Amino acid sequence: MKRRTAQPDVAAHKPSPDPPEDSGKGDVVDSRDVLADAALARRCVAGEVAAWEQLYALCHPPLLAAIESMLRAPPRDPTLIDEIAARVWYALVENDGELLEKFDPARGARLITFMRALAKDEISRHFRAERRRRERESGAVHDRTQQSTAEARAHFSEFLSTLTPHERQFAADYLLSTPPGAGGPLQKPHSPANIWQLTRRIHRKLLGYLGRKS
Image (cartoon, rainbow, N blue to C red):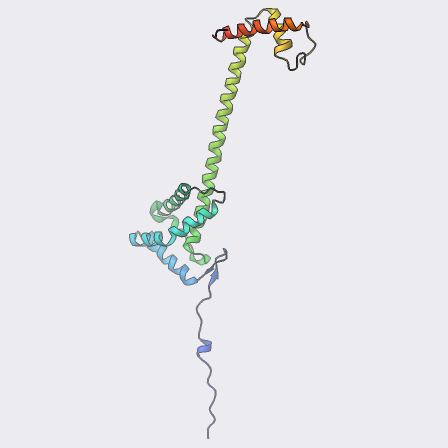
């Protein structure tokens, strides 16, 4: 009687599909999905309208979610989210999908990961532009403030020239010094009644200079 020889388990040695890869963001990526994305990208670059529609349906919702997550500071402006997403799509379709040709499936990442990187770049550009705009506006306000201050000083100097020497000295000693005498020793101390009279006189002259009635 012949002894039966144990046959090797062919199923046990059957090659298994490539294991899923990690995209680096904590989510597991199936290599077959990456290859499918690469095929879809090639169809888009070839100008296939249906491929672009498929890409939009596949990636637009997660793209919006990714942009919202990257705009950390609340409140998250829906208009800004849509604007950043629109910039990403424009970058992809510009020059007949030239940018999409840079998608490399060998990196093991999916198309949405590629688009997240584009969105991150667009967000950085947006905030750099906003910072430059605020700096320009702040500089313009500063320049206007300096100009207004210079004009006010010129007008005040002109007003002081309309006073008598005695009134100008009183203004320097009492009205333009806080507290009185802080700018140096008083040229001529005045009694409270004299201070009141001179202050009233200068006040009336200032109103007249400004074209107002006392």
